[in-house]
Image (cartoon, rainbow, N blue to C red; front, side):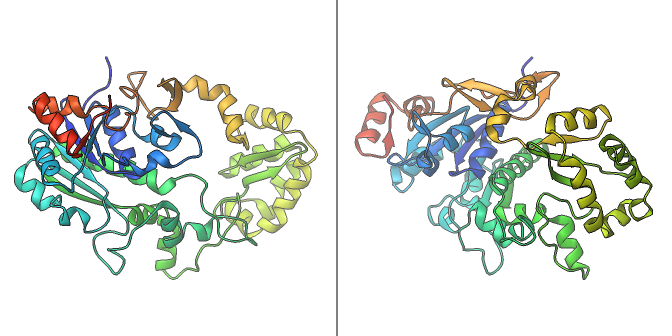
Length: 391
């Protein structure tokens, strides 16, 4: 039996870019009927974020909008708002990520919509949050990585701050939003939920920030190393790079044995993790000296045979060819292309998206018909530019 716990739940998706669409895509994968409301002329801005494009949108749009129906609707017109209000009658959730103050100016704020539908779960995804000196500022993923200190702890010690190479804040905010919405639906009555990219970014530096709040010095950049555990980093091999994670004293001893340097396990300078952290500058070169003479595949086999967590540093082409990727079943073919489906299964069955990401306005006529509009009324709205209908 498919895992569709949100069947019967309707979500009106007024979001764009990546954070909001990620949240509503998750809800759709869990069975919700997600109606993606887009501007009839331009649609979600992420449709144009290339360089690689599929029919109807970019790779980024494709990856965050599966399982949704698209209604191309101009909400800056009275007629467009009338359509939205009719859809609102049967909605359970509204998610919006408009610039601060825009929803309220358009009459789409939480108070306005929940006055019409008191049981509505209304989720706002903003930039810096509703309060504070930056509350009205816009925000994007790399901006938040800079503002919340993530870039300051990313990169090589003697280099410049570096952006994390994935959209960590956007996707993380989407996951948090989906979790909050599911919790509010479980509670069973209307709620107004506020999430922001900045708060998600702060949640990703919890122990570093707590340390500073307690009087500690700001954490610096450590490259691939982890400042609290040694050895816990990438090492150069004879033909590549290998991540070795010896997260406790037992694993450290096994690592030394596998590398043929058991004397380092017996060295009192490195007997415990706090000592290894304190003496990192002495230990790492000794390990590196041994590792760089050996091939990645040989080292990896010995380390894994000894139960030591280790991995080659794959590029994404390597990931695409990895047997483990296929074995998980996480890839799903939609629209003639593969995309990454939700990262969990229920009773051994992978959770899947219901159908392809929509073309702009692909479901406009279908959705308006469901809302009680006649063909003549839909044609009139289309001719007036209020609605765009994909043939």
